[in-house]
Image (tube, rainbow, N blue to C red; front, side, top):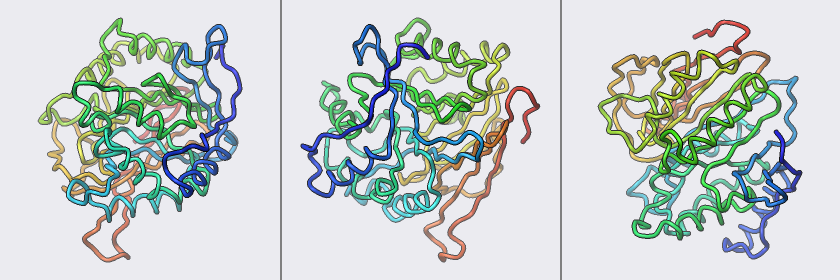
Length: 345
């Protein structure tokens, strides 16, 4: 992609998280290499294009996606046992990256929630696992009249990524996958700034990356019993028209609904992964939902593996109400193949 310049991630020594936070931030910075967008030499003229360092395209590449973690010290708005267990299990996976589809914290106005995130994910930081967040509605909680303080907290928490002043961006994992991280609280209708950026990035990536993934908070396809958030349905409408002419396979991961769902619409895989710790919401699994799960509570994350022309996905489920030997299961698996071959499920 043109207009990019190499940059090394760094975090300010004046981090508000204290000595432990600064050490964690420094470790994360050492584990990241970023390619940041530039336009006429101005680094923030367009959303960042980031790149995960050390990706070996010849080997299997594993990364994690999930959402609705709600990091906070308030135990009444999330299940801290499940949230912490998922974090530790992800650390054992040693993924190349973790993508969080929004509602990372409970209250975006309260920097203490971001401090809770920093403390609870220390195992990721010590391994140099980069975290790429999408904005969710809770990132704006208690900033109803003025969103800027909440955005400042989000940008400050992830200052190593140099996201400010942007609310959406892209991340590449080697030559096989481009991830577009969206803000579903911003307009996605045709001709909106985010939509124009999305279409430009898809057009530029088509044929260059076998797989394109979107990570956003409000799921474009989900059980219709749940109300819509904002413009997320526009994403599904766009790909219904665009996907037949694409050379890349598209996977879209939303969260917001505190459960797990999987759909296939217009040759696009749509997932709901909102089981990161927030209070569970039952899923009715109607209207073409493919996972066929029978459990109503599904704390989980998604483990993706890129290998050759295949992108495999596994729903890794944690049950906090059973013994440790039975707590971890993998009840749903799926696979998407590059366009040169037929999709398999």
